[in-house]
Image (cartoon, rainbow over all chains, first blue to last red; front, side):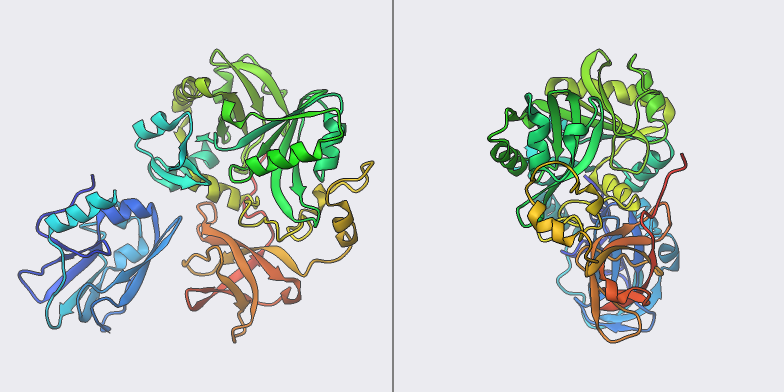
Length: 129
Length: 365
């Protein structure tokens, strides 16, 4: 069972979102569950800083040896920062998915809707595994 | 439900990620597939290949039956030696690629891919009619464990008295390994030196355990199908379903050399293949190395880099390459596009690729 920190929010696309409760800037990454399912991540493409995205937009991609997955914007907003370290060293996604493996930060515009709690995401992934 | 191999319990206890491959529940990876890949290149890897099929053809005319049933000239194979060959349909389309071992003058073992062996066994039985030869699919009785990598011989030598140093590439011998009867073959699908060990199902787990223990000081890791796929791709080896299919002849795949027209008698596919032997194929299996980091994958179109959207080929296999540090792919590319700068359409964006000779990786001998 991979870790699912209580303080984060989640999406059905296996992304995590930090900062929903206390700020306008949210940090986005992929969950440990997703990283394990992908295997060794070899390439990460993140959106460009300054891009405005809508919730559900495909804004990047994560490639592993066997597969490639889109990264979606979990909420609408402007991309204010991207993790260049993870672009240079994609293995950070496997090694520290909730920490150094974060992908990008968004300034929230509007509401953060349809996000899952840790409990709901746990239920989702235990159903899939 | 996919079928488990006799090593299912071992895979589960190792925490393997399992996947359905050709109807079999197989280990995709145990930990990091990159580490498994590198272990095979630098030390050794241990594979469960029990999904492969073993079909025995025996009798006074077993060799002649195979000469008729397959494109190769198997009746001249020396006992103890093996050949890479193919079985085609009457139109010359590839039904499977095979390794045939001559175990004794009147005994051959045909090793077929997991997805194809029931069909291969059926075709062999049909084609052997009229010959004094019997065809028996013994796939259910055999497990197959492979040790691959530069340290393979040292590891295996700790478990057997067999003359491994004297065992040539594409040769096999019956031996005792870790107290179990095994057929040791010096064959593989990784581009490295290595051995494939055919054993009875019940002997698979003790053999695996013995190899794991003997291999530990040498850096041996269990390796899954993900590493196997990237290893064979670097070695430029075709995978049935990707580079080979019934829609392609051996000539289309650049493997016309396996078709032995000079053998005596007719064989299935001769009439269809003979006119093709001097015809340059319209497409050629081509090695591509990506300039960027996005990976060309199976089914992606190959286009001219000069722009437009002229499709000149299709990727059959692609993956990030540990050995090259860049993504690699094999693709069928129109010979008319030879010399042109190429790109691969990776989900809507054209990524430049360099055309290189196959294989991508060749071990130092």
